[in-house]
Image (tube, rainbow, N blue to C red; front, side, top):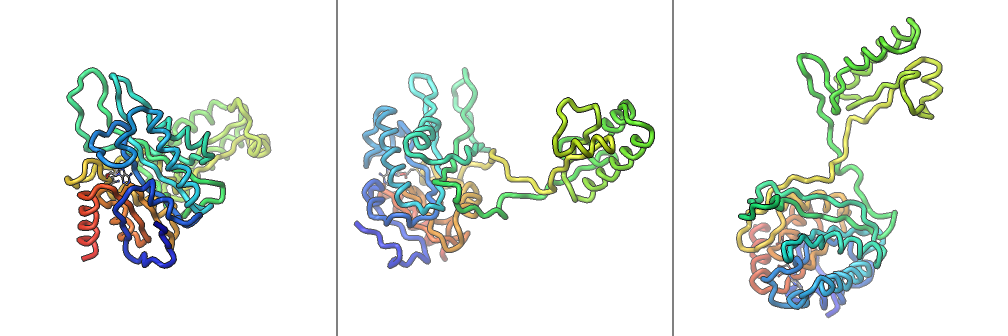
Length: 332
Ligand SMILES: C[S@@+](CC[C@H](N)C(=O)[O-])C[C@H]1O[C@@H](n2cnc3c(N)ncnc32)[C@H](O)[C@@H]1O
């Protein structure tokens, strides 16, 4: 079945019931901006239909992921991204490291570039009854691209660094208050004038942290640093001190603490919040998002909210109906 995207009205999510391995073949080359998905996990017994129902060994599973990876590579635009969430599983008490195996295969065998391994920390995950190991409380969310020119909305993913005050003293993000540096200046081999100038500049630097101009800084003192920072060498030699400043905005980290979804009719739904950053940062406004394992339809719902076009596939009739219902409810 050929899926002609230009003829399709994608102003609302298009969802198709069927097997992704077949449906993906109908998508034209280089037509998708973002593939955002979570395929069935290895050993997931609930899967009754399609190729994953028969993947009994790790090699079978990796072969299927490789087939998918090849199709993903073909249909993604050169600027596109693949955000892939995969859970791990145990067999004979041993953790199988399935996500890592898949990521290495996609990198080494298919040439994907892995930009990030985001850890999704599932805030409200309940510990299993197992008592002789730690509970499993995270999953991997990999961000792959095909080349250096991938689309990235650089305004997404930074946030203002908050300055804290401790008894009226300004404290930088890494706990710098200036006290240590004052001591170091006193003990340094700088001459009297240089020390006065260093103390004055340190106060100015702390004021910059306080008023939000910078979030943090390091102070270098002549003779006090084993590695002489080349770009600062001249300043250090001439003045006796120098500063390295950190911007007042910091990037969102790669550990995301997001609670599991409250949707009860699917066994492994995405929480919607997990999709905000991937969609906003990796899909341009007029772009198309594809989730070939749509499940309860969360990707489509996030796309409605964030105003992106969405195409989704789901093999299971009940989940397909659930996704349709949730999308309709969202649109009303
Ligand atoms: C891990 S779940 C994805 C859940 C989804 N992210 C959500 O928010 O609900 C994987 C889904 O893939 C579906 N599935 C399994 N094999 C499939 C196939 N060959 N083609 C399409 N969907 C498939 C399963 O029925 C299941 O709903």
